[in-house]
Image (tube, rainbow, N blue to C red; front, side, top):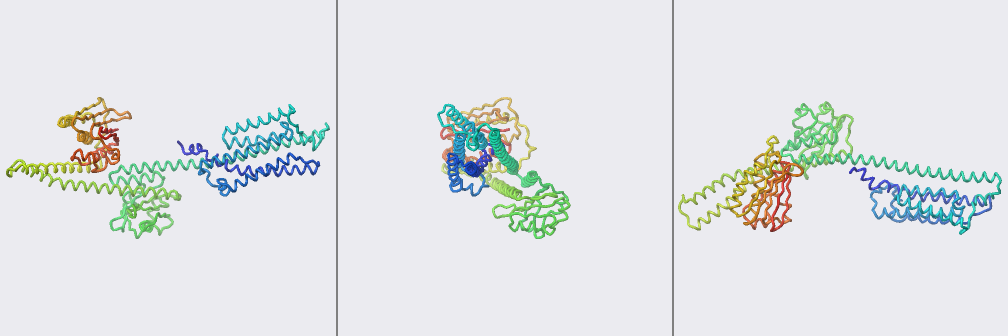
Length: 628
């Protein structure tokens, strides 16, 4: 749905037009009252005749218009619109909008009632004032609901019809056309006829001119608001495009497993989103004295090679950022602001903006955006680039933290693996009696130790596997793999394990499934972890079902269902967290590292797949994976 359509649907500018017309009606009513009283005065002055019913009617209009003026200026929510007429009506509450509509209906209803009385007094349906009912019908049709316009039109026609019926049936006093029979008695002479024609023509001219004025002012007002709506819609579309691109940028950076790839994505996408000449990321060295180019886009190789590092003290614009400025903008005319102004000019750069790559209070470096000749940075550009810089800094810090964790996992796993295997080998020597016979109690102790060490060995293997998964996967290593073949190779192993636990395991593998982009090792690890978990947490006599089918949206669908202990609903959000095991899983078995599902999630992320889980305590669990 387009932003402009949303605004039209909400009728924001029609609502604003209604609010603006309410005081306009009050002012117009004052003009009618003034001209009415002036006409009565002229009638008395020139013809010594005073139309008392008309005076009473004008007095009534004066009184209720005075009340409307008081309401508009003194009572909420009308008061705020009277004091701040340029306020944004899109923020008016729903109940306040209802009050504005009621206020408009009240004014129009009283005006039409007064006009019908004036028509009745001045000759009924033959009165020239009957033309003026069209004004409020037009206003109602433009400002209020279509049903209101039709309703008012029907009521006016019924009122005029009733007047006609009353006068024809002599059920009501027939008031004469007072301008015809009182101001100038009609005795058939040509002067009287000419005057009557002039009065009728003048009334028609007034009706036409007032209608034209009313329609054109409303048209111009709505056209102005329409242009404003179009401008706002284009601005919203542009903002939506930028935010969508920013989301894609963050998504692409989040999938990066190397710092260089991440920063190259940031500079390339930032330049593309904002349409600038170039972007660069410069990182601080350990001494916080120099900046080095970590990534650039749009800058020439000669420019980059000649400035492998930038001395912060010699670059005022960069020093300003390192010292804590929110942003710094420099123009090529300000030569003292740059360390290499001539080189920047040769690159065709007219101005640049620098922003800090900040994580909390720590500055990682500087994010620079370069603009070509004739371009400049607006306040909105600065805010958007600042958002880009903050997101980029967060992603850089997140990746650095992840890489440090991977390094630690690999280091710790490798350091533990050799001594662990040595201890396991020594225990096997003891069990075989090479160092002498052991009594029963000693054998039980050795067995318990061996079991614990096997758990530790399993943890080390999972840590190594996880660290490998989190290192960069070479896209060229992926190839088309037939998943059914990988699963069939594993099925024999799992059927053997299921028989040992007296668990019924069923494999349902569809034929002619499409190949997936993966590696045999990745699919092997994916299937192994999911099926092993199902067997591990299913008690004897239970059932495990493994289905490999074609997915409706394309690719393949792996479903592993068991009748095991189930997963508490409150633990769903933590299933793919490292080392996490639900309490009922710990009570059911001591074995388990809490890394199996983490490895599954890492594999699916690398293959651009997805996983979903459903489970009920005591009934079992179902894991569904989709692979494109």
